[in-house]
Every structure is written in structure tokens, then in C-alpha cells.
Image (cartoon, rainbow, N blue to C red):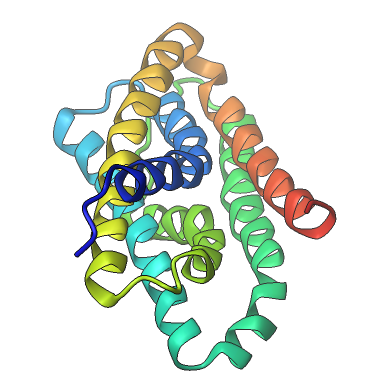
Amino acid sequence: MDLSFAFLLNSVLLGVGLAMDAFTVSIANGLHEPHMKTNRKCLIAGTFAGFQALMPMIGWICVHTVVTYFSAFSKLIPWIALILLGFIGGKMIVEALKKDDKPEEAAVSFKGLIVQGIATAIDALSVGFTIADYNVWNALLCAVIIAAVTFVICIVGISIGKRAGMKLADRATLLGGILLIGIGIEIFISHMFGS
């Protein structure tokens, strides 16, 4: 197992890069649920971290087994992220625009959280290509480091969203929905027209 500084630094940097979408969605979740308890924060951050670790490993396995199928699937990644995040964000916007005399805080459902986790981590499948030369133990260690970095970054994102959510109150759900749609569009554009 490679525990060199370069390997560890590369894994941490991969974690930071991959966690940015999850960070933004964490802010949106904090906005949507400003009175979130610590165990809920850990559940959300843990879900994102789990998917951020799982997707590179799936990509690594694909590289070592069914690379032809994965390359065909990789073209769908921006579309899947756009559709999933657009749907969740659109639902949040509709909820925010409903005329309600007493706005109440509603937590993102577990199913919704899973969809968010998949949508923000699906582009991490391609990391399997960048770690393809790692042996299985190094790939697993890299995935664990990515998960740990994502967890910490998402906890920070939720905390930022909660603070802003308490100040924005009635507009928090609307802003969270707009953020999710924006993330979906950003993932789509960066994959379709980026490098």
C-alpha cells in the first residue's frame, strides 16, 4: 500500500474537487432546514461522503472489467445529474412558491437525500480512470480519504446554509431549489462543453 505524501495529497485534492457539488447541495440543505440537528447533519454529510467514495470505486472496477460499457455510460452522466438535481430543485421551488400562511420547515426525505448523493457523486465515476493504475488497496484508501474530506466539507456547507437559512427563513427553500438547479446546469455545462 502506497502511503507516500504524493499519494495522500493527491487523494485529499481529489476529495476536495469532488466534494464541491456536495458542498453546494449541503448549503442548500442547510438553507432548506435551518433548525437541523447534529445527527441529521451527520446523516447528510455521511450520505454524500459514502457516494463520493462509492462512485470512484465503481469507476475503478469498471476500468478493470467493463471499460467499454462505462465509456458509453459516461456520456449520460451530465444528463443524469441535470435531471436529478433539476427535479429536486424544481420541487423545492414549487414548495417555496405555494401560498402558505405558516411556512414550515420540511426535511429533505431520505429518498431525496439518496438522489442528491447520486446526483452530486455521479461524475466521480470518472475518477476511476484517474486511479486505474492503483492496486485495490490504494484505490480503497483513496476512496476512504475522498469520503473523509467530503464529510468534513459537507458539515461546513450545512453549517453555512443553516446560518443563512435562519436569516432568510421564508426564502430559504426557494434559494435552495435555485442552487440545486444551478448545480445541475453547472455539471451539465462543464461536462458537455468543458475539457
